[in-house]
Image (cartoon, rainbow, N blue to C red):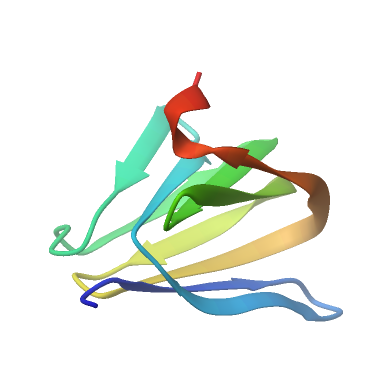
Length: 95
């Protein structure tokens, strides 16, 4: 399966290093959806939720500021602080 490698890292630990189909990030200028083949981009993140789609479910993380580096096959989140949100929901509910 072609996908994105998603890494979410804080100064204290690595929360995730996994392959996902898509990622939605709280960019400083608004929500940012990333799929495989995205153009290279580096931007800041505001406080909010990261949603990572994998199969029929999504993984969710709360992030408190930081930066993201995006390439065509990888998303690296360097968060000031982040934590896992304890729930997996169907991708259909991407509200």
